[in-house]
Length: 245
Ligand SMILES: NC(=O)c1ccc[n+]([C@@H]2O[C@H](COP(=O)([O-])OP(=O)(O)OC[C@H]3O[C@@H](n4cnc5c(N)ncnc54)[C@H](OP(=O)(O)O)[C@@H]3O)[C@@H](O)[C@H]2O)c1
Image 1: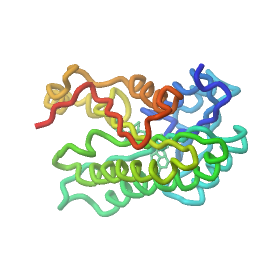
Image 2: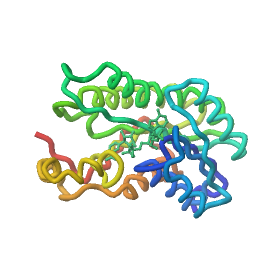
Image 3: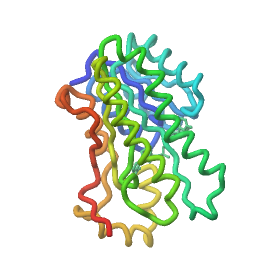
Image 4: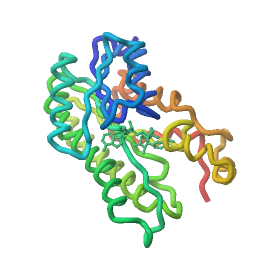
């Protein structure tokens, strides 16, 4: 129970990887505010942890909504210790076919959403120090046809993470990012369920399988814990050993 008495916000905490991250923090004793535009599977967490799990709807691309989310979390949970900026979207498409509104959705959710979460969380986190975990992807540094927009946002998140760590260290706030490969739920699950696509990807993973979202969630718990008290500005790969031509 490494997070007893601690308060966490997990954006996109209603399904996929974010759901697993919220669940992992709850299992470690934290109180968790899950957020997304819709409640998704939140009720499952609420049933398991009725006293320590809350939901607050917010679009991470909306500055006012994100400020309200962090303020509501700090008020309901008596402060704020951990923010996991996990909400993200992926829209595939070769550059000449990628619709501008799909590009905008990725930039607004993944990149601007990450910035807005940090910006709104800092006034609350700096009261007693804290941790921010941003969500990158192995696609931040691997080239795949059709992933220009998604890859660009994730690469930008990694530099935003490093810069945030330098700026916020003075407040006792650590900032790191997780970089998962292909996981068995959410976006990765949709990919791994496609036999033809997965056959091509599978041989790239040294462990020969997709990761479980619970395995990536444990890496998030580690980064937020005191076990990682001197880890700052890092990008932690959770990809089972990824080889890429
Ligand atoms: N799963 C993987 O294999 C994998 C691998 C590498 C990186 N990642 C990263 O992990 C993160 C989570 O991905 P996932 O696979 O779990 O995806 P997912 O299953 O599609 O879940 C995405 C979550 O983000 C929320 N969300 C989307 N747009 C939002 C917005 N504008 N404002 C607030 N919440 C929003 C969704 O809820 P609503 O739609 O209701 O808002 C949902 O809760 C993403 O950043 C993704 O890039 C995932």
